[in-house]
Length: 312
Length: 221
Image 1: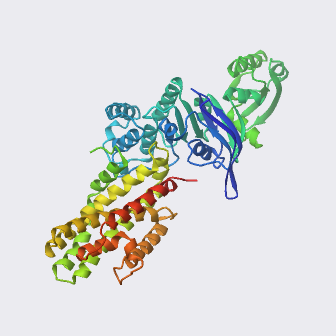
Image 2 (image 1 turned 180 degrees about the vertical axis):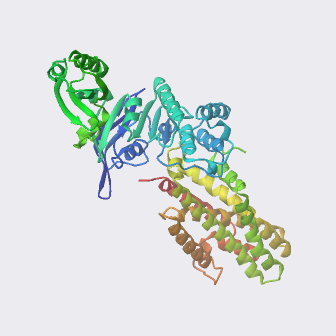
Image 3 (image 1 turned 90 degrees about the vertical axis):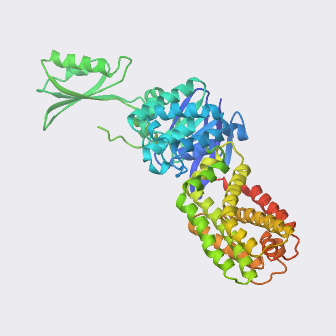
């Protein structure tokens, strides 16, 4: 185990930023902290980095003091840099402060600046950088020394699509060499796509943690398929399709709709849809369009926070 | 030069800011050289140089540090595997070097206009270096408390005024002036026989005190 938090509590005035959080992060694991703004994700990252000391509970790391800091890379939620220095000089300052060999620094930074499409601007003062470029530079500074513990606060904010893909590749590569990665996000898709495990937070409390697919399965949520049909058909055959639990129908402005609610199975929603379309065709019906809504992390999160999904 | 340490980073940043650098050198020269060259009372000239050391050191270091904190860079420095003492020492020494350079011109002019004995030059230089380091250390100490730039300015002004008064630059302060290294610079410039050896000792004590509290600077919650 790289990081072990036990019953960590942190209070800021009347606000309980962390409330009895117990969480482990293992070697080679990518953990996504998912939650709305103010749910305690950033505080948790700062507690792990020892920037904030918890009021109660313990944080165990494999090393202490400077050795721990030397093997940690952190991206903050702000974009602070030395404004008059160039991007390269900023990154070099951090790389050298982390103890990187001067001969290795240049080559490593050249690679990372290239991967994030910043190589052409690395000689420009940071004061001329856009927000996204500053975020990329922050990531380069956090990753250059190949840390074994990577803490990233909202890493994809401000990044273009290419940079997001690059970041995901770099984090997966870091995890393969044994680094523990902890990132915070309020983007469900990012958490589901990047994390091996997701920890759901709300108001400082850890609501649940687990693999994204396991969390979704635990919800026992249903697949909803909305079919627009050319003309009304008998609904009974649709209800007999394996997995289908209920079928409803209504006439809307754009035509006749059938709503099928089914239990997800191993064959996946596409296979289920194919069976339903086949059943419609068996009743001489024609499907004009179909919308499938499968349960996801959003539903998990909303279920745990006691809110209802208004997604279509 | 690469910014491979906090000290070098500070120097590089100062060198990059050409306008700021010009102002830092031009302002003390513009204020002090006329005073030195127009035959003003020597005590006024010596006090002027000492006040410039206090002002540039305390104000520059404290406001600079408060701004670094406001920008969020202190948080980032706090997660580096470099001790707060080393970072703080680098900050103080880099700023002291720059302050020393900017006031060195008026100081050299003063020593040329009022040439002291050989040991007097030594006393003046040692006292000057000590006062510059002490002023910057005091500036860092002042920056520990404020939560904003405005508060930082207020504390810096109060500290500068207190340091000027307690160093006996306005009126003799017999019970306090010997405890601050600034009075020794003033006395050395007046070629007054003084225990100038206390000057570096006091500066070292102040520097040590600041380095001792430096971890507080890098704590964010």
